[in-house]
Length: 302
Ligand code: GDP
Ligand code: ZN
Image (cartoon, rainbow, N blue to C red; front, side, top):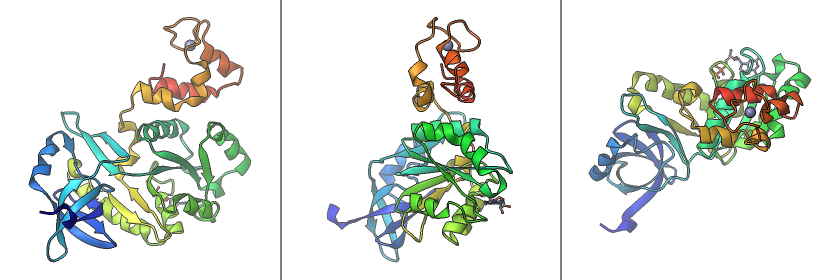
């Protein structure tokens, strides 16, 4: 077979054994070439939504995935089960839009820090979105989030109901491949509905299928945005607590603490009420946010 016979496309949804692949704006239902299946033993969900694949087109809108192209990025978590297998939730994603609410429920900044570590470990650009701004005082909200802007994060303040920040959010997602994540009830679906009517509905349908399915074949769909770009939403992404992060990733993400790391009087300093602790001294002096330091230690940073 000639390689030039293969068409290139993007996997939009993985149904376990079959995949929906978009090829030049057309949806092709694909099966996996036999020899590619062997890799499944080492990596659950060898093919994920977002993967770029080469497909041999068959009749009746069907195809066979012959090759999976190397990934630029990979959002994965440890899959359920006794053997620690890695499960890819979405491939080739550019950025994570991490949504929390100003109130109802109030943003849990410790959880936000966890998301930031995970998404940085996955090499994704991160956008923090604080929704339900209509329920809180703008100035105190900005003050609470200032530490994140201070370390270079983009923070959007939105209200899906009142319309604040929606143009900026649309702009930030345009022509990008985003995953949207954050706890439930913060307004993720409402935001998607506000910037791209109809999109959240499709995501909801996917979620319903996923809950019934087995854990290892969790289905993630990429949904095209009407103004350009894609968004992937997955229940698995919302459970920040279950993700594995290494100490290296924690240290890397806390750039605000970097100037003080390794400067304590004792090299084995626990940074908890210890003599000569550079981190505690910096927190006391207001040079670092004491809550960020606590967050760092809770995630196993040292
Ligand atoms: P999700 O679980 O993150 O997808 O959250 P939903 O989009 O389902 O929203 C949860 C609840 O918050 C719903 O009752 C929404 O109407 C409400 N909600 C969403 N966005 C806003 C907002 O900007 N302001 C206010 N006041 N309520 C909102
Ligand atoms: Zn210390």
